[in-house]
Image (tube, rainbow over all chains, first blue to last red; front, side, top):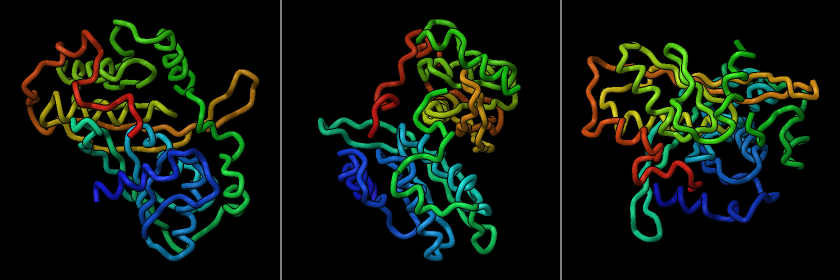
Length: 142
Length: 142
């Protein structure tokens, strides 16, 4: 599981942003190096498909992006999306030289508080461009 | 409160890492641009002074660092430190040109599950150098 997750994160995503949807297995979205909207779209798609709970997972610096994902979903796409649980932990990873290093990880469990209530605009509008909605400072440090 | 927090984060910390302890008011540590150990040390100091609960707050990209702070405290310094609550939210900030932008924010509430039980080493060892303990990959994306 650990190894599988690392493999997923080191795949094409490392080559930069692409048009492909974010990697996901049922109900789990791993946030990595793609644009934030790629993950937002992946989560919305899961809820659209009837998945009752979606876990948004991230490690290291991607943790901030995972939080952005949860907030953009709540504020811009699904009015009744709720954060059910947040888990923080430390994972140990083996580097190429064989040494072990620790990295923080986060898992945000999201759910709907009833039948899905969408916010005015459709996610498809944003997914094509992979841009954050205007005014959401996902890239800038404030 | 909003403005005050912004002011704190834009203070000397923006000039880079310094020897000064991280900015804090009673029981609240704002995580910004300093080295992670600066904030770890500030939290440990608060618990040492008898503060029952310490809130670790961060916005934008500093959110990942705030998670590192909580994990380093639990794993390396205070054995019985617990995360009582995690709040995620969106804050609206006014840029210099007057436009509003949104940014994710996080608040991790930490407490002790009894009298403080320290992990072998003393925080002072790390605070001087502001280095993360060996093996904690706080700077690298994995």
